[in-house]
Length: 163
Image (cartoon, rainbow, N blue to C red):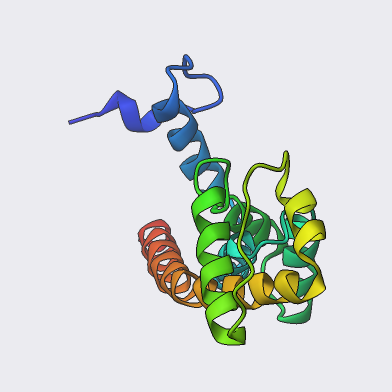
């Protein structure tokens, strides 16, 4: 039985919101080059960096780390998208709480400022470092999960293509 839905190129399909974007994302992800481990390392690096409170530098940091760890740079950029406008407030708050707990600091986060950068400038260097450390700790488990999920996903795709 021929299922036409699987044959539609996402770039040519009519845009119908988040489903179209998700299909296009999966289609683009499938075209990543390299073995599954290489791609999975890139995604894991991107997810890790995407969770840290370094938003103006996410892409640059992810590409740099992918270069250092010999991982897929395009995959790292895709992984950075784990930190998006919906998840960032929660991730930053979690990073703040974890970092402050580790440093034993009690500075309060006042979200009345216009941007997180303004807030960090007001709180100072010690709080910024605490948030970055908290974000790094918060990013470990999602990065590990992303690595194994991605590696298994691409291994299955490569296996199917080989048949």
